[in-house]
Image 1 (cartoon, rainbow, N blue to C red):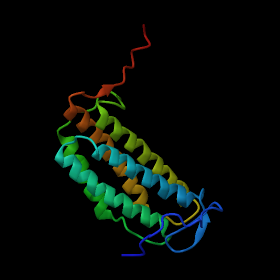
Image 2 (image 1 turned 45 degrees about the horizontal axis):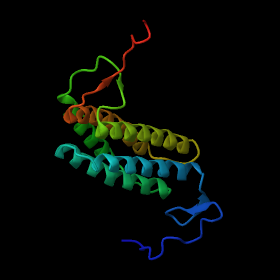
Image 3 (image 1 turned 90 degrees about the horizontal axis):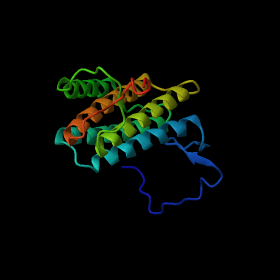
Length: 184
């Protein structure tokens, strides 16, 4: 394992810069820092879901996802590093298909809600979508492996399906968008 921090503050970022994993320094608002920071935010939002009462199969998947998001953050923090691969994306797709198999077909749009853990899952999904957009922005300036973007895209799909599962498991059910509410 790498260096361990014995002191949390270093003062090296007081000038508005931060160190990347390769030792180089960049502005704290650079596209790269924004991208891996938003991946970290998505990981924290998944931690909120895990803090709730959720089914064991969902818990296992989300714990694994947290580790992969940490790896992805490392990939984005170290230019040229790779941590996410096609097998990780394939695993997400299999998990997504398994969770989706027991859900009714979608006939309406679903609004965020359906109980606290489902709502947290919707929040994690939207943060994941933002992380995906930030990584795409980074890819316009620096090399980004396509697996990183594909992973985030698939993860947001998985989180949508997991939110549906959690809404049903909680007994709250899904919150459907009422497109006729304005008609009268």
